[in-house]
View 1: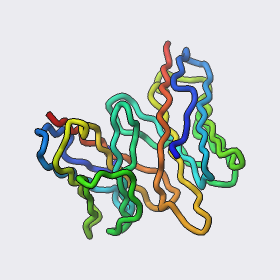
View 2 (view 1 turned 30 degrees about the vertical axis):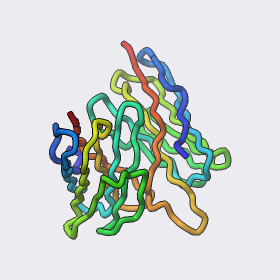
View 3 (view 1 turned 135 degrees about the vertical axis):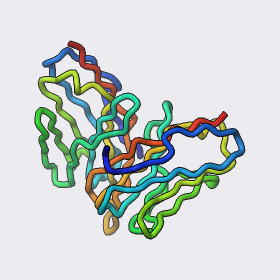
Length: 115
Length: 112
């Protein structure tokens, strides 16, 4: 039930855009996105709840397609500081129940931004 | 400083030994999650506590145990350590369901 992320790695030049996808085979209640820099802890970017909403955070935004159980993270006009590994974390939707906020993380997408 | 405190930052120990990792959640957060991160396995969920009660369990080995105390700090106990237990262990906390996690800086465990 681990979500699948694609691509596994992305190399960009400053100012270019990127899209990272996260796909689950199970019904989802929420999708989280985190960024982890080498040797550091993952940092929360945003959460998307069941309902197909799209959220934004400066030049980083995300969408959640509830029907397809897919989420995408959009990074526009990339900056050097965007480099790192991006993880999606999924919370399953249990009919009549809850997963208590437990997240299962994808394998990560390594994003490298060059000057 | 994320507000989640993990100690120690580094731990080197021999096979067969037992260690305790400690986590203090961010003030006001009732949920504590433990994750193991290794190069080939990514972030693997171990266990979750909410206000002192165990709420969810992942593929946590029987040699591993955890608890959350009344002051909400949590401890992860790893016993009969094996070389394969070497990894980065993260604690994260959140206010509750469907809120983002705040991760601690992790404990890097090396079993030799």
